[in-house]
Image (cartoon, rainbow, N blue to C red; front, side):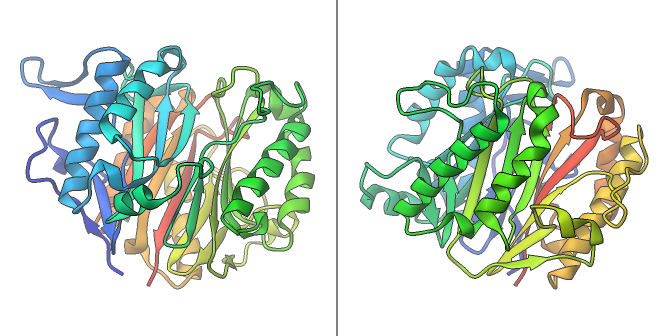
Length: 390
C-alpha cells in the first residue's frame, strides 16, 4: 500500500512544509505520526517557541495530534499506541501530563510507553508525544473488557505498554542486577501476551532503554533473549538514557508482537550470526527494522567516528539495504526515531539535509530526541525505523 502524508487543513502552530519529515503518514487504515511537542511559531519573535509548564505543553501536543488525526479520518479515541518522551524535569511533573491525557483521550486506552530522555530538541520542551492510530479503533476499544492488561491489539499487532522490573506491589525486582531485571520483564511480557493468546516467541520488535550503570553487564542479557526468542530473533534497539520511569530500574523494554507469520530479513550481514536480534523482521506488510548506528554490519567496526552527518548517511544507507532485502524501496519507509547524543547536537540540524536528499515523497514521520549516550561512545546517532511493503 502507498503511504500518504497527512496534511491538516488547519495547523496554526508552524509551517510543516519546511521540514524533512511528515506530520504523519496514513497507510491503509493505520496512521503513524511524528513526535509532537508544544513547539509553535511566534511571529513577534520570528522563531519557534515553547510555552507553559507540563500541563499546557501536554495539551498543546495532544491538540496538534488531534488536528493531524482528523486529516486521516481519526480521532484521539482511535489511538492504539502512544509514546510519551519526557525530560528529567518533566517526569517530576508527570502527573500533570497524565491528567491532561485522561482529559483529552477520554475513554481511549492506548498502550502507553513512557521514555525519559536526556532532553528534547527544543530545550524548554518537557514532553513530546508520538502515536499510532487506526480508523475505528476507538469503537473497538469501547467494546473491550476494561480488565484487559496494559497492551492493545490492532490488526494482529500487539503493542505492550512499557515494562519495568517492578512487582505488583510496586517494589523493584532484582535491584542492581540488569540480567535479573531483564528476565523479570520478559516473564511479565509472556504473561501479558498470553492473555492475548500470543507467545513471547511472537515478538517482532524490542526497544531496550537502559541507564549508564547497566552498561557494564548489558551484554550478558543476550542469554535471556536467547532463552525467550531463539531461533527467530526480533529486531531490537538499545539506547542509554539518564534514568527510567522507575528511578532505580536499570532497564525498561518496550515490546511489539504479531499474530502473523514472521520472517527474518538480513541483507547478508555476517555480524548478525552471533547476535540475539535480527536486522529486520517482516510480518505481513510490516517491516520492523533494528536500530542502526554507524556500524559496519559485515565487520562490526564503527565508521565515521565523531561525524554525525557522515554517520547519518551511512545509517540511512543500511536502512535502505534492509528495506530492499524485504522487497521494498525507499518510499516504503514510514517512520523513523532519531536518537542523538549531546556530542552530536551541534551538527544535528545538518542531518535534515541528508534526509531531504536521500528520501522520497512522502517523507516519513519522524521523532528526534536526545539520549544520554549510545552503546559505543563514538556513535552520535542511532535511527530506529519502520516500513510498510505491499
